[in-house]
Image 1 (cartoon, rainbow over the protein chains, first blue to last red):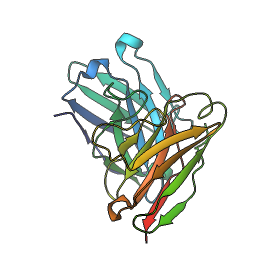
Image 2 (cartoon, each protein chain N blue to C red; image 1 turned 90 degrees about the vertical axis):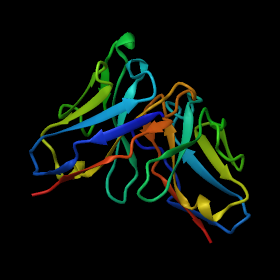
Image 3 (cartoon, rainbow over the protein chains, first blue to last red; image 1 turned 135 degrees about the vertical axis):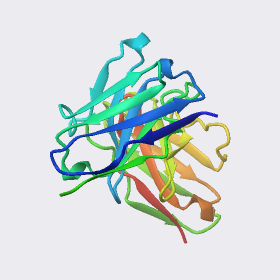
Image 4 (cartoon, rainbow over the protein chains, first blue to last red; image 1 turned 180 degrees about the horizontal axis):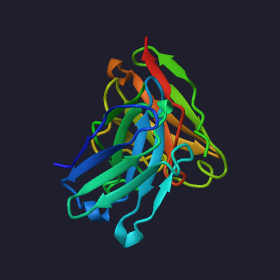
Amino acid sequence: EVQLVESGGGLVKPGGSLRLSCAASGFTFSNAWMSWVRQAPGKGLEWVGRIKSKTDGGTTDYAAPVKGRFTISRDDSKNTLYLQMNSLKTEDTAVYYCTTSSGAYLGAFDIWGQGTMVTVSS
Amino acid sequence: QSALTQPASVSGSPGQSITISCTGTSSDVGSYNLVSWYQQHPGKAPKLMIYEVSKRPSGVSNRFSGSKSGNTASLTISGLQAEDEADYYCCSYAEEVFGTGTKVTVL
């Protein structure tokens, strides 16, 4: 079964750090471009960032609001994606989803995790 | 990159058809056919409904259809059903930007 399972969410104070993980199974993780998407309470979906496969260079790109504070990495030996979040702000409070394209549907995110909640509050 | 613009809400009666618009620019929606649509029920992860502007993934009802004209993409739901009540988001994959979201209400 194709699956993404996020973990690591929780309550953190402003200025703090948190690392999210996303465990993948059922597809060839090493070939996948992986993305993080977040959703603040009652708000819409917001793309956070993406890491390409190592075959395609392994490079990362980030949305402007998180650039310089968030870092995406991957461990293909563990089929796991990470999101290191530093200097957290209250506006980073959101459900964080990892997502990818299986390759079956061009240019679309057809595999999603269940999400993990991050709350930034004093 | 600014979010694509969608109407905040659209409603319709069971059996009717509704259309949700998604307006971008010549740099995103207008340039690429990598527009997709997602359905999200409360507390759930998004689900892919349309990819490459108008193609349906396996298992998605043929009541869902997509199109594009210039910088605006559209999602049409025909034969509206109670289970279609959800939030819908468009996405320009090439520019990695989502729409503002539309709440669909079945009256």
